[in-house]
Image 1 (cartoon, rainbow, N blue to C red):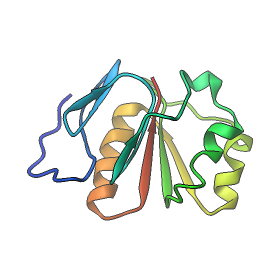
Image 2: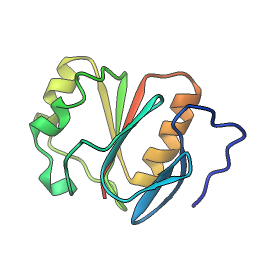
Image 3: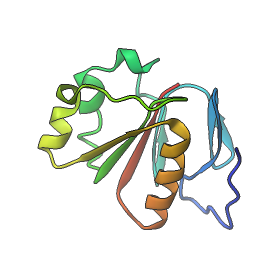
Image 4: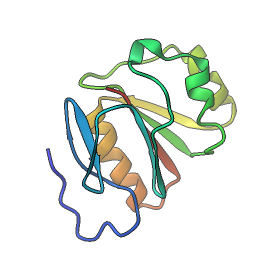
Amino acid sequence: MKFHLANPGNTKLFTGYAADHVMVNRERYSSSIVVRADEIRTDWQIASFDELNEAHFEYFLALQPEVLLLGTGTRQQFPHPRLYRALTNAGIGIECMDTPAACRTYNILVEEDRKVVAAILF
């Protein structure tokens, strides 16, 4: 699916997605990425949902989002709460959803000036 944006400017927004990729400001990504309103990170080294561990979630502490949206691929999956305990202890919310829902939700929250991070898995 493609999104149509009136004026994305410098803000990083999802402009499309499919089972094997997402597009941010019309640039295609087919491996796990982290997206904030002001940057795209490709250094979150994880290949699949099953590889998630505590360190993968601790990565987000330094980013200090209000909420982390975890896009878990083509279907919604939920990691064990012990994996993201450091985030909840820091007052950071986490929402797990399939990747299309994470992309849509991220765009809405960014447009509302919320401090949101989307972590997208394939």
